[in-house]
Length: 173
Image (cartoon, rainbow, N blue to C red):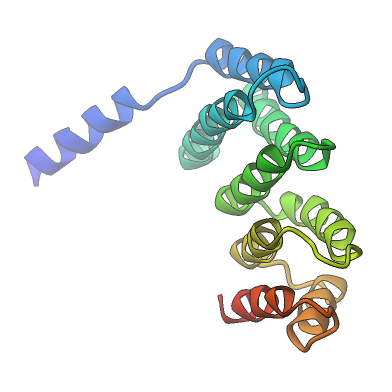
């Protein structure tokens, strides 16, 4: 038991983020998420660091400072920005995935807006649709409009069968 506690404490020490470090990650993401001259992988890597920081902040629970609470909100806002950027499909998909994995209910509305835009297309990107619905399921919003959206598409509202399958998977999850 003592060894397990020491290992857990050591792991927590190894996986910590300073406020300044998180601010640098935010700046890194800002510099690359919509820059078409840079590879999308740069934005995805920056987003990954932000997601790790967010999960670390969330795990700290009530021990967060006011600045750290603001940093959590800033991280969610960056994922929302990346979700909406044009002509950066990989960034969009990774931001959708990150919002779902972070699990904050504030991420549901941006996902719904993004999904509605995708679903307006005759042949939406199947990976984007899958992660959009899956991330909504991970967040678990239970407001009527979100549930209606998922159920309508799970019952075949869209002509693309991949959309129906992704919505049905979200219902299951």
